[in-house]
Amino acid sequence: MIYRTVGIIGAGPSGITAGIQLTRYGISAVLIEGKCPGGLLRNANWVENYPGYPGGISGEELAELMTRQMEQIGVEVFADTVQLIEWNGTEFILSTKLHKFTALS
Image 1 (tube, rainbow, N blue to C red):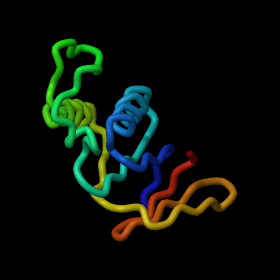
Image 2 (image 1 turned 30 degrees about the vertical axis):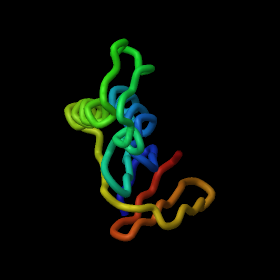
Image 3 (image 1 turned 60 degrees about the vertical axis):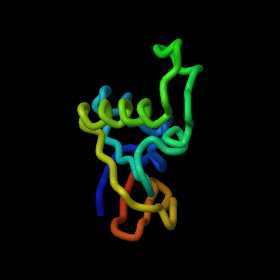
Image 4 (image 1 turned 180 degrees about the vertical axis):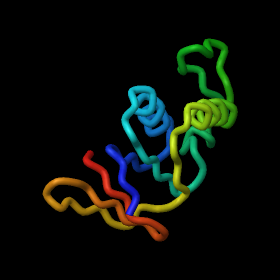
């Protein structure tokens, strides 16, 4: 069993952002992503509405930048798929093919 304060399912832009911010605040988090970090952003040909890139950026490039920042700060990502989420009254148990994670939220 792997214990963390927060469990995040999906490493798209929102999951990556949550993982980065929680890690900055010293809150232990686990990010579980079935495929590659970046989510559907990787499929976007051109992103023109993301702050900091007024001229636009490819989705693939933006996803890579987000992933690099996430890795630099030490966000822990598991390449796995959540199969079951249970609440035992005090914590969540996230079951994947390879692991069981326990998180308070």
